Image (cartoon, rainbow, N blue to C red):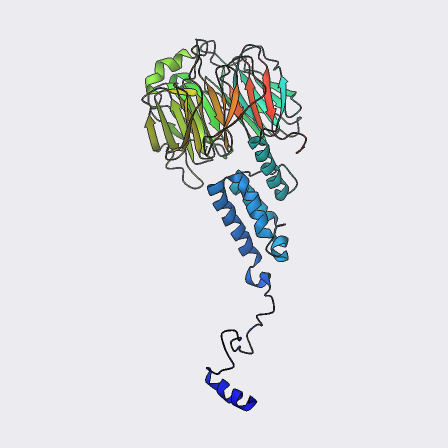
Amino acid sequence: MSSSSSSSGTEGGEEGIGPSSPAPRRTDEPSPSRRRSAEAVWPEHVVEAVAIRVASDVSLSAGRLAVAPAIVSIFQVCSTWRAISSSELLWRELSRLVFNRHHPLRPSWREEFVRLHRLGLNFRFNRYSHHSVYPPSITACRRLAVSDHHLAAGFLDGSVVLFELPSCQHLVTYPFDHTRERLGNFSQSISGIVLLFDRLIYASQDGDVHVAEALYPPSSWPCRRVHVGNLMEDGVLVDFSGDDRRWVGLYAGVPGRSFRVWNAEADQQQVLYVGGSLTDPDSVAGLHLLTDLPGPMLGRARVGQPGTMMVACTGSGLQAIAIGGDHDDDNAGEVLSEVEFPRRAVVECMDACEGSVLLMDSRGRARVLQAKTLEEVCRFNTMRRRRGRLSAGCMNWGYVVICLPDGVIKVWDAATGKKLYSFRERICEYSSTIVASYRHVAVICPRTGKLNIWDFGGDLLD
């Protein structure tokens, strides 16, 4: 019997090999019962590439807060993949991709990613602490800027005050320039503040731009003027914004010179572009800002995509404008998209952050748009104007924060338009000056001058 089985086995269709019998195996093939090494099949750089691709897909489809659970599931595949989870290069790329973070505030990039994820959870589920402080200036606050560790406030008299967070300790006051010749009572009113990791940049309505270098340590806080404004040639600097790569200014008063773009990376802050006609219909109103008490905002300009494009808004229209790139500054000033408003927009309620734009019209309908194409992502209703007052709003990395005319501050999801919650604290009255970062929301009460700060980091992260 054994002899016949052996002879028939040479034909490949013998009785002894059925559906449940193993197929013949060559001697140089690995045994199927022996587990293959994950490291041999998936090198470290391949696993990192897979994790980054999964993070990108999950962030686009389910939101940034869904990335961490997806990454954790990848690292549970085997011990080799878990070892790769300690790669600093991987966490640096994930922090940049998911949270657009380029400077870590923790000793390692993994800790920085965990910190940002927990901040996002706190913001999503309304976990914060509230603080307040009275600035030393007695004039009206015109602009606010907030980062993880600092809050800057700019005032009508041209001074800028810097606070440390979360202690709200007053660090330094940058006074206005007494030697500068003034044209109009409010020519030195602060029109914009850019607060970076290690620099403070602020501009006034007369077009002057100042930079305070090296916020750490306090003993090295020189402040220098890097651009001297010219009201007759450029008009009034209505709004000023930017990041660590580009600064943008919105002007009104001289036709054909609505925008100015600076290269913030250059040693001398090179001007890349001057031009545009967005504020041409508001030239006279722009010049009146020098002598009249400030009323509603004339226009706003924000960086829509870091270092590459800006969005600018007046009551009649919105434009997306190229401001250069890593190796392409020739397209600066090119209008990428444009929208005209059938009903005037609420300029106080326009902001942009990481590829998204918040915009609200005079009927209380808010929309979130894609910055480059100005296509609508979502929309939601807030509240109609009350007693002539309009709502003011801002954005951070995933949320819309709006201060309503009755002083209530509410938060919406910027991806879906879903209302999430209201702050427990109410400011005493409506405020048009509100800003938000990853960790903080700040708003000033116009009547009392009190600065209110909501901290979503708290003791959990400090």
